[in-house]
Length: 120
Image 1 (cartoon, helix red, strand yellow):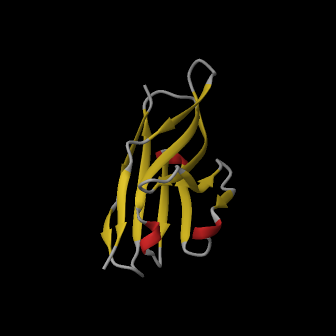
Image 2: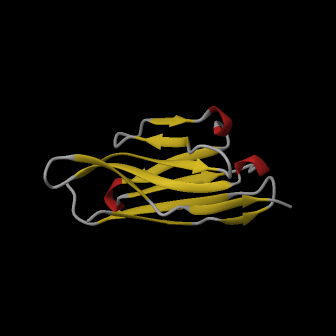
């Protein structure tokens, strides 16, 4: 059973920074892409940033230049460094991983979500 466990959310003032972490555990053969999505109240879940195993990245336009996604393949962990946070960044942030299972079937897995609130 694969699990994604997130940490690092919280309350921060506008202009502040937070770092999210997400670690994958369980039995699997490989992790392809890892990334972060977010969902604000009343809105659809949206992509924030994604990183491939080879460290290619893709960002939502709204976070480019402020957020940085990275990963440690040895630790099966993805990070999201969020700087210059704005109130509109307030949302529940979800970790996602595209994983090759032991039966050679790929699946998408999700973390439980971590709340990020940007407010003065």
